[in-house]
Each structure stands twice: as C-alpha cells, then as structure tokens.
Length: 353
Image (cartoon, rainbow, N blue to C red; front, side):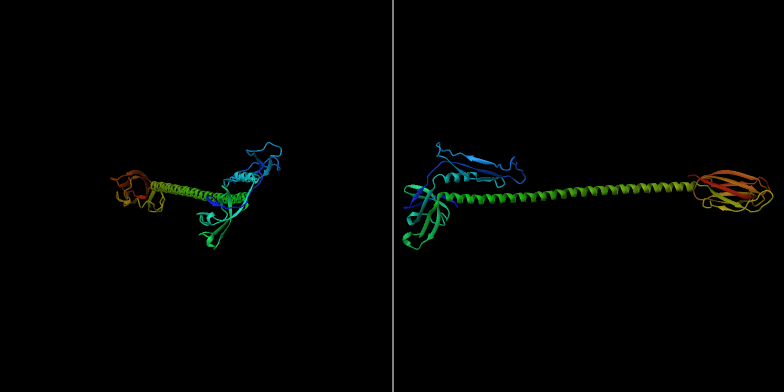
C-alpha cells in the first residue's frame, strides 16, 4: 500500500458518514527487544511489565469527555524500528470519528490518472467531493468495455471500508518491514560472527605460523648447538689423540742385545727390539775382541736422550748417556780392557715430546 497524495480523483456523489469524536488516553505495554549480546534487566516482580500512557493534546475536561484505548507497542533494537507512533496514531484515529465513504469513479472523475500506472489497488488516493478532499483507499479496479465511460474504460471503486482500516493496513505493512529489518540485522550479525570466526582462524593461523617459525628457529639453534657440540667433541677427540700420541711418543723404548752365555761373573739372555723404529744397537770392535764395544744409531729425525748400559763378560758394567740431536745421531760404549768384551748391551730411548 502506498499513499498517493498527488492523485486526485473527482467523485460526483456518494454518502460520507462521520463518526462521533471523543478524546481518549492511549495506554498499553511497552515491549523492548534488545540486541542478542545485551541482557535486559528483569522487573522485581513477574506480574509487572513496562508500559506507557499517551495523553492527547485535546483531552476533555468533563467527567464523560474522556475515554481510554489500549494499544501495545514494541521497540526492536535489532531491527532499529518501533511501531509506537503508528500504534498511537491509529489508536487516536479509532476514537477520532471515522469516515465512511464509498463510490465508483469513472470517466471524467479519473481525469488524467490511469490505474496501474499512476495508482494501484490498495493505494490511498485523494478523492474530492463537495469541495472537500479526503483520503480513501482504492478497493477495486475494473476494466469496462463501454466507450461512453471514457477513453480509458476504467471503473475505480474507492472506499467501502472505514478510513482507519487503511491505517490498519499500513500498520500491517510496517510490521512486515520490521520483520524484514530484524531478519536483515540477524543476517548481519551472523555474517559478523562468520567474519569474526574467519578473523579468529586467520589470527590462529598467524599464531601457528609464528609458532612454526619459532620452532624452526629453535630447531636451527638446536642444530647450531649440535654442530658446536660436535665440533667440541671432535676437538676433545683431537686433543685426546694428541695426548695419547704425546704419551706414546714420550714413552721410553728399549733395545737390548745379549750373547746369552752364562759364566761365573754374569748371566743374561734374550733380546728386546721395541725401539727398532727409533734406532739400532749392535756390537762394535773397539779393541782386539769383536764385542769390545757397542754402538747405538738413531733412525728418523727424532731428538732426545738415550741411556746405555753395557755389561762385560767379567761382569763390569759401563753406564753412559748421550743427547741425540740433528747433528749427533750416534753413541758408542767401549770396554776398558784390551781383551775385554761385552756380553750384553741395553739402550733406553727417551725422545723429546
């Protein structure tokens, strides 16, 4: 339904009935629908409800010049709509003296206005009768074939119901719009919830990415720490190997040669050659006898010290030592007698570390 105040139809007759007017107070419940995320305060007693009272500006002063009309109103904060004004206006019009008018308008009464183009069924138009214009709903539109009814051949029926019924129709339409607005608000909230969920998911994904990056960083740090520990372990192994090599290198080596003969003065036998890689020990003819001396000759490039112990057949023991250097690679020991000879000779090799 639409109110077409620019459409003016001319009625050539009809009855106009006007009801009695009586001022009236309007009262009723005042229900408020708050947003879903808010909580409405409840009254102390369940039998109490929110309400309102509307005092008309032209309220009568006499004992029988006033009445009361109940009309409940609602305020929907979700749809941002309220029917307070429409309900109060409709309640006042119910006691304002209703108009009742009914008439068929054809031909010249339609003027330049055409049904379906300028107004439709259910629209409220202005109808001029006896020099007065009133708002009347269009209740019927018929296409007639009599050309005498005008070039357009339309017959429009206006009225047939109280003018206040049009207000009821308007109120009904407003209620529909309120439901539409409320549903729109609910959809917007649902979309907002979905967007919030999506934002939360994106945030969670970002947090997961940060955690993953942190985990990667920790993994990288752990890998660096593992590499550092491995490097330290290899360094410790190297030092241990070096210490072992140093120990092995600094260990005394022994060379021993012996005739194995036993006499009245001495007895010994066997041969030790743990130092053959470091040098050689052999007999030397320093006098008449073939074993009148013993010689140690160093091998390789090592330097250090040696201790030589040589025992003659008569039991005499010669002890001597020498430094083995780059320029001195030999050491000899000889018996003191012309006819003496060594029975055994032992060399302790002590390389420098």
